[in-house]
Length: 214
Image 1 (cartoon, one colour):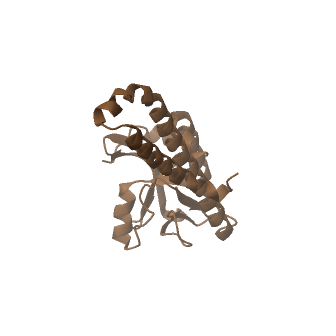
Image 2 (cartoon, one colour):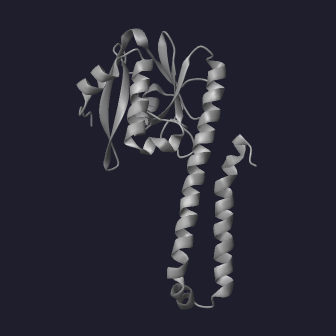
Image 3 (spheres, rainbow, N blue to C red):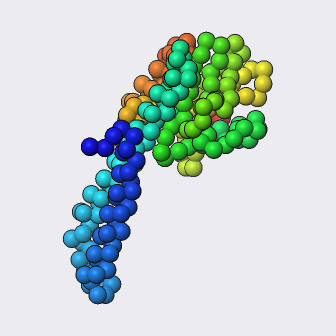
């Protein structure tokens, strides 16, 4: 069995498997035409391999996210620690605040973390032992906005400091992380995060529904 932190080897194993398959095909087929003639028979196996690879990536992301959450919880033992996903707008904020941008944007391998304390809300990147920045709760304005990400519109929670340009824009992530692909679990995660911030999700989410910022 793999250890909890050892699941990251899955993608490596899959890549090595693909290379091995490619080598076997090259050895068994003398021409491209001969190879293409058998492609229909290979499609189910290829699709299965793609599915296994995607599953391995999601498992790896969930395990690494859990490890990150436990690490931060040890550093902030009395805080509420929630996994979140950030987008390009947070990179802009990081550049404006002149803090490092590594691990601030969307990551395929781990999630960012929101730490909720009595006086502030901290944003933690995918690595590091300190938050990148925080928003003071005494002056915090909370709202739901729609961000344009590629060709999609993503609903994110914005935590803005009314007295400064500092803000946090994130989308909460449910656990295991692959459940976030379903709207029901995304909604539940959003509502729970709003409750953690001492707001009523029914009032906030209904009031701000459909609001677009970009």
